[in-house]
Length: 422
Image 1 (tube, rainbow, N blue to C red):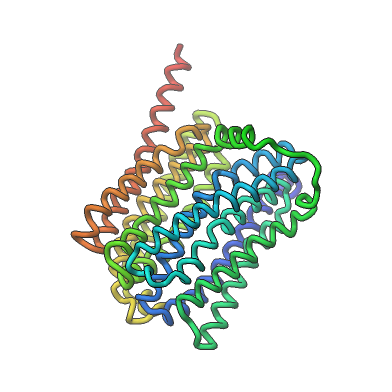
Image 2: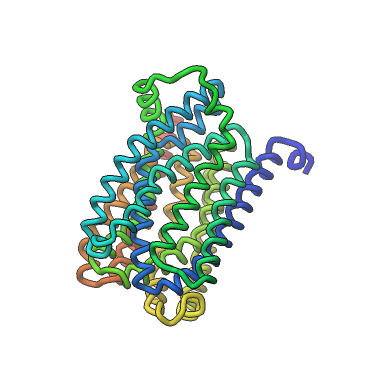
């Protein structure tokens, strides 16, 4: 207990609890407000809103270019270079990120849902470099151990979202454009906060980084994590884009509501997986890791199955209670996604164990396989079976990605045993 109170472990646990608490409080506020906005938008409006934000979210992960990971490493190891590092981030993200935004705008305007709504498209895609910058500079706060500011930068934008959404609901002026405008405002604030807290570095004109060597260093050290993160995000979100392309507004709205519920279900699993990764990395010995992983994976998967079974039972009731009878078709989608969440839980555990056991160079492979499978299956199943087909694609793709991760772990273990036997 003394170690927990006074040692490095205690500080780590306390910092993690602060960040987790800030994230959960912000998520709770924004989710509650989003429920009322969703009821006001209806399935069609919610479908357009969900599709555009999903497209922008993928663009933000592209425009990040792995800088969140690079910043966390370089800011901690070479703090004297933080001013030059931040200037380089601004140039890369707002420069190349703007090109990503323009490309996504062209893609969006080719979709029948929004082809006549260039303002809505603009409100969505302009957030691409802003969100990327917010993710990148927040990791600098973490590297500098400014945990309180990092927690506030997570909580305050979500709290603002909740307040602003509540305002437009009370005023009776909810629209897709209004919701996207609020989202843009919140993104601007979420980007400005960490930049303001890091303004001392930004105003420090000393030093510099050569562009090409920096990019080469970032790509060499962080490319696997970047590709894995992008593929992981796309594996989860590409079905929303494809439903919007094949089926239009209302089905995208139903699926968006159900997938958001699934995202909330997976949050406890992600926390457990991250804790498992940290514990395994701290005690990376073959026997300890194997025993710990086996028990934690079994317990976590059991919790996932029980939680998903409970959600399956209450899905029709909870959907209509929260979102109203207009979203009743989302209940069957949520039930099928409960099965997908079990597979996604398995994948997340394997993903974090790969990180903990020093196999980061293989990190991208499971997510890429899962993403490719999800895209291919959606192309085959959505035109034939609609929303059910999209759910089945996820049910197959998620555990497939997890099995690839498990295969890498087993191969690595056998390889280590052969080496030890020589």
